[in-house]
Length: 385
Ligand SMILES: [Zn+2]
Image (cartoon, rainbow, N blue to C red):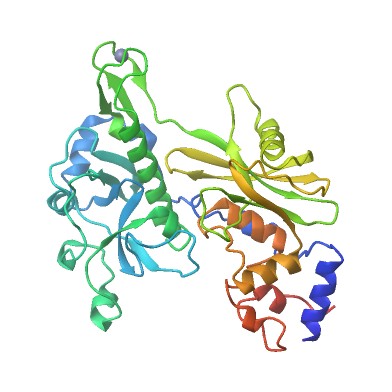
């Protein structure tokens, strides 16, 4: 209790908590890739063909932002904003089993993801008319969690799960593979034709390029830079907004696409001003992570601004507020505010400012009642002052 009182004094005083500050941004969920991309092999058609004929090659399945997963808690209905944490891993198959599940592998279906001893590929599964993979027999999942079936903790088989929903709980290896697979899959889906002549194109280079049949021009996967920013005022309050398209209660840091010919720092100032009327002073780059839904690279920033009342634009944002740490913790604990999902860089920026993990949504019973704050790790990690 004494420690919490000390912490609250620190918060109210607007002093940044030194413990954990900045640590959360160093390991962004979708920026943890560990498998060598082995880019030099993408154009080696003989090597690629040999790898796909090798039963030791490992394949993951990707479809429209989702990946096939094993474990518990995955599935198409997992909400990226939900606080529950599924226990899932990528379903990893050999090439023959992957084709058996996904159907014939046509043009651009194979995506070479890299190599870490064995080769890694993703197999793209068509979004429409795809076979229902829920309930697939576990014997085709060469790396399914054997302990799962053995101890009965979950059903065998695999399900499609949104990467947005489970990016933070996948292993670094799986998160990196899935992020690349989803990004490439989205690019192929959205760019089937030549941007020069409109003609059809064919995938090449292990799925890392498309070539126009008419003029031979080569085209490469697009990445669209976006900025996302934790704006704080002179009292160290954090500016969060509620987007018009979101369910009630959801708040996040402000974000927007970088426009043509625009530096990222200018995009930060423009987006914040357009959406809230707040004029940003200093802008500081923090970290980035890919956000392949469908093709963004999120560039994370911190910024300072005067704490004037925000004026949400009413179009993109229908509400914007300055939060103190105590206020945000209380609002989250009360269930009045739902913070951004754990896979997002927004969550990392918010918790970086907060100084540690936010309390669980709706855990108000654990705050202010004199009992240990379940989930308020920040409190427990404070040194005795
Ligand atoms: Zn063309």
